[in-house]
Image (cartoon, rainbow, N blue to C red):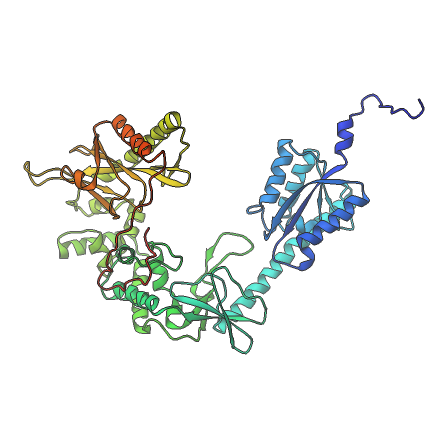
Length: 553
């Protein structure tokens, strides 16, 4: 029995076998070719073969910065597996210290390594000259390597930023995304055009540069329209956005416009043939910060202006007046002066009167526009009690959606999920039903039929379950189920006589509403409602009509 296998007492065979298993972590940002994923794997495989290790798992981060752990799913998964005890390996093989991370705080890099060590998993740097064995020399070398990796990123960031500022000062485009009505043209070192760059495309050669070009003539007309509506007609951001969306004019991403896009267009100097760089900056993965005006880099973009420089200057003056910071007492005093002159106040008067802050500024400083009115002794004729109940009715919409989801799961076996601020249900990625609140409007007399108004938001598909409130707008009076083919619009207007026109179903109780929804699903073979048909609306006066039908869907 000399060749018999002898197992000593206290020997754990599973543990012995596990010590031969290792995981590899590889990461590549946009740096050097020697740091490619394939080269790292080859070096790690050679180390594993030399030391008798079997690589059983790979954690990978491609195109990820090593400045922080956020945005690195591979490293996050690795740490989670180690901490949860699910790791079936005892070693983590990494090419070098910089691949583990270029954390600007070296203690952060050490912290993630310590988490692995505390759970019985050792981190090994295969290409480093030191052995990560916990000795004094190993610790000193590792600390210096971490500091060098962090400093390399910092120095590179400074050099790249200086180079971008120099290129932007020459009138070239620096960065990827551009504004509405502009295109990017890649040119060689002799200014010869090469190819237009689409969204997501970048130049390949360092000697190439990017110039801006005009888009279509329709886009240029839209830009001029925006400036005209803002400068001459004194329209607000919301009014301009609404006009563009109603005219089926899509933004540069093919989606509907938002209020925040309007001031972006109005302040874009590309439309007068100039470039501006370094308005904002994000250094080494930190938060985005706004830079002061003296740090901006201006350059001539070598393109013909789309907007007249005089109109652009007037737009900048109006924008600056909206952003001016004045004391709250001064804000209220100016509001009193306008009230004496006009005799009333509302959002449109405040936004279009020179010298007054925007409505959003009053809301920011005083909590609400109604609060600012009360401080100057003005009572708005508008019924503002409805604003106080928004949170309550939002919770009611969510409660109804959850109740319907439970019924659909129990009775029909449909798995639905909340969507659209928890007021709608989706089944398989398709909108099933949305819950809306319709408040009852004040009628002119007892002989007038009651009317309800519901804000539809941007919902354009699925059934609409409208909860109609009573005359006090405090409780739910009944429910109305409307089909998905209802004409698109920002508001839904309902009355007793309009139900037949809208092909709506009146439901006195919520149980009747749920039965009606289930009947619609049964009639459509348990399929979710289809997307509503967009009506062909004509472009509003003052804005050009879009060439394509892209817009609000």
